[in-house]
Image 1 (cartoon, rainbow, N blue to C red):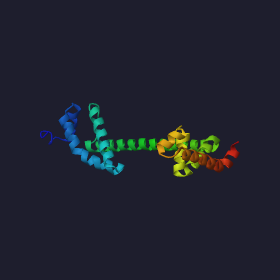
Image 2 (cartoon, rainbow, N blue to C red; image 1 turned 180 degrees about the vertical axis):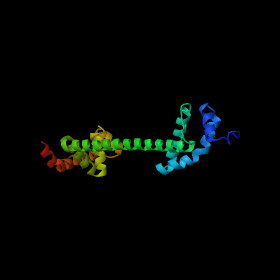
Image 3 (cartoon, rainbow, N blue to C red; image 1 turned 60 degrees about the vertical axis):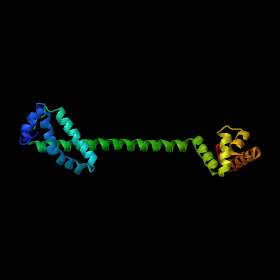
Image 4 (cartoon, rainbow, N blue to C red; image 1 turned 90 degrees about the vertical axis):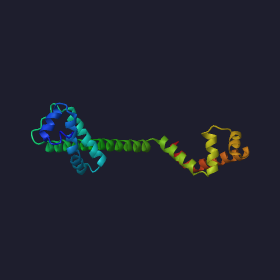
Length: 188
């Protein structure tokens, strides 16, 4: 690469167009640092800036045969970085707008569903009342109703008497009936 270091940008560009990787590497080494700073000033994130520079140089290498630089190489690369960064920002802004739209639509649908669907409201209220039961009573009740365990199985799992399990389930049902009575009357 030492033989290339004295060459002008124009000469390095011509060699790069012919596929000379050493000339391309020298262009990269000459300008990547200042281009990263340029991209960093726009993006504010070093990793994003480095990614943008990599993309510009990859594009530069892939299209090296047809690239026409009418001015000096440095302003050409600055413009390429600026355009790449601005396109990246436009994409990110568009994606962010789409995500915001999806979130807003999702929230709207969720709200509509919850407001309009009495079954959802009823299930939420029942779940809330179950969560308000005393801890041991809630545990026994959930094992009985959602775990489909018999009173004997629950008593063996929790190491309590079967009569205690029966009493806890009975008390839980009584509490739920009382607390949900007014809500149930509105639905039926």
